[in-house]
Image: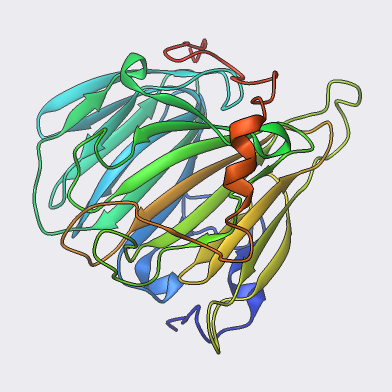
Length: 307
């Protein structure tokens, strides 16, 4: 059954860890399961020596190591991805695989890998994105400080439709703020993008056994729009087809990571947003505030031991 996130209850838009897996994937979000047209995300765990082959179909894909290293073989080429120990230690290299192809992900040491996808028209070449080429941006200031790893942002890495970035929010901070949206085509001001948030939560240094949580808010931009207030844990995902999304809140003591996967129908591949008019003033305050001194969690180009 196809789900339409614009009309289904909020529970269908918040996918707790383990609730949306299929086959080898711990999480499997497709356009059909999400009820939209473009964006996909799969989380693939591999045991040591494990391998997985998949057909790309009508979508382009990026294979991104979340923990561990791997090889990606496609189009007669094999890309070695050094990866990282986990998402809180380093940026990662990644591999791009085009539509209408077959790809194999293999890991000698095992790990966990994100497959971010988007339906597309153009067929671009398979290639590796190096970790040292990932721009690391500090966004916001004060309690709204966060780190953005723009590994597949528009203007950074070429793709046909897919846009993907990583956001790291120190414990106690708000990110994805002020609330913003990208569900209308407004030339030069806003683009239409379906978005997936996938979360991981760091252990607290003072209580490594304690489970960390975060909170995600999505507010309707109009009648019948998406309305979500979710307590998120590691492995959860939230689907955002429309509406004002933010804040994403990290509990004190637990840094929060989320992977954003976006795609849409507009001719220009661009991340153009409108801030919520009641909260846009927050950006002006950042001019007189310093970024959180805990950031960056790691420096641009930092590499973690994935093997």
